[in-house]
Length: 117
Length: 113
Image 1 (tube, each protein chain N blue to C red):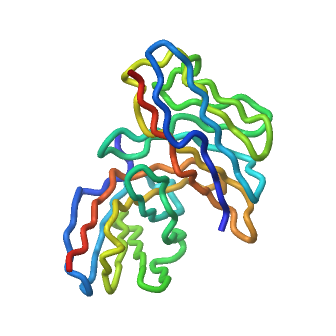
Image 2 (image 1 turned 180 degrees about the horizontal axis):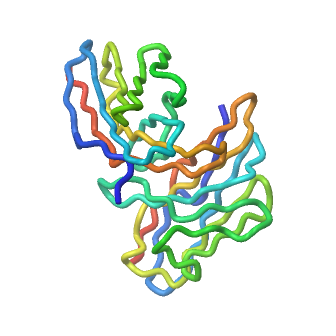
């Protein structure tokens, strides 16, 4: 099946610093990538949708200046949490949509645990 | 506004029995539904999906049923195994192959020995 990786798998940072999370589709080209956030015992909430080479589309209530998304190639998207605060601590998951074999689906990465102290 | 709901936050089933996880939706534009399994601190793993033109899809121990008129779908796992213990999310998608997924709130399944 299609493989999506995320790096880092976990990160601890100090309040006020910025953190970059990478999402890569390893064996297929992802025309669209999605970024989700999951708080403990809650559902996955879509933050934004990014298409390669264009600006990301953010969901209502998600600050685009705080969560910077770049989708520079068909295999890489990055999410940068700028000026992180403790309330940004969460589990961030990306998914990549593309044609992998004969199936066109979304494939999820393993997630990144962000803890802001 | 929660467009996809899983009203049972948890479910406990004995090994070998059938697990039935339910999901309801409100958006009539959804035409494709998926079930994902998720372990803590991991990304969701795709299990099975169903298009709105069908009412049943089966893959091994997993069967998904769709009742469009009731806007309800269910996932049946039979026989349940201890390794099935995880959180299960249903998700729905509007037409368009790369459309965003709307996830339900999840049901934690515990399969006991």
